[in-house]
Length: 468
Image (cartoon, rainbow, N blue to C red; front, side, top):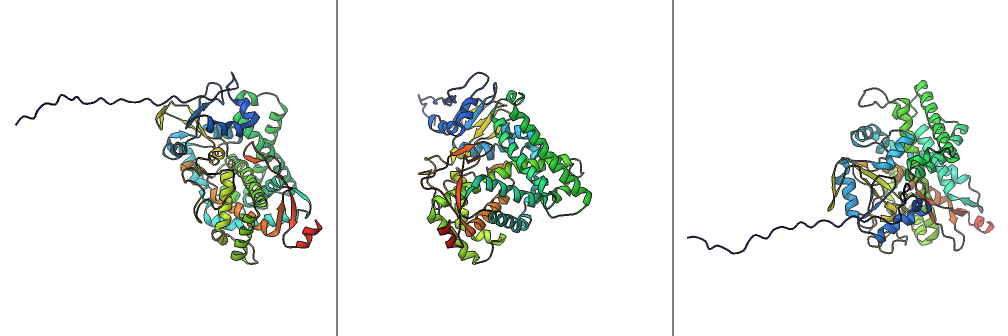
């Protein structure tokens, strides 16, 4: 039997073009949005989230298109699904030009190879050996703080971070003079890298005093590391530190030991990336504990319950869930990363958009973690935003160490430093803010406190509080 014919025709499928990606206002010839970024980079980036949609275009370099990705789902896609097909972008490219090729700056198979080479330095058993050193350096630092006197907390945390770095990376191979020089030079380099990433390339070629200071400091840091490498290699000793491990590492391409320049580049980049971020997170954590005495009391109660009267050890860190939530909440509210980049190598699909090759992609963890649509009342410090053992806020929106194949290689090392230092400091001293004191963030290489001065009180000697 013949089926009756239908007069209906198949409805054609209409493809709806995605909306055009908006362009941020205020771009200037030759400078792009550099003026807004120099005036108030955090404010400019945060305003993009409220003024535009999931993706917005800005100009960092003339002739280069930069898309700031603001939707958390698209950020995850960029870091994970698209991660293997993307270059690391301008931020890391500039770090590589300024500091040398390293696991932090490399992309593609070079990154994979370097990551495999360095991974043993960040293995659990290796970090276990570092905790006593980290705790010892923290105790030495606290001993130098004058009770009843004001303390520049950020400077103290930079010094502590550098001390921990020197002892875990270099063991005893740097004398006191070399260490003081390294600390001063690293400070110049850390501040200079952030500025050079944002400014057009031609600015750093100008004969400005700041450019000359940066070059001198960068070369001096590399020379200090080179001398340490040469000395340790000549001695033949295994000091059990990261430098010794790198001296025993072979290059997968050549089968030969890493050259002094390769080792120097890895350590220099890790020092710049790790020291500044650790110091900033420690500073913000101590600031929030001072502002929130109820949170500080819970931290102390947990430390007393777990540790009793003994010092913190590596095996204790996993048994301090409230302290971990305090650090996590600090990483949410005061994340140190304000512009992380990637670059398309080929034509790439990002959500509904097709992005040409050579397009810079960027996202801002600091702004993402403060989005009220993702974190209600985002400026409130609340370690109990999620149940115990979970992480604050939606998992796709909380990116303390990035995600995907380029996730921070030193995440476990950094968390160990943070937990060990905070657990040691708060049991020894109480840091007080002046009444009504608030601290504003500033973004250079990282988001850090502009100024943070606090008064030191001896927690173990109440009489010293009254005397102070």
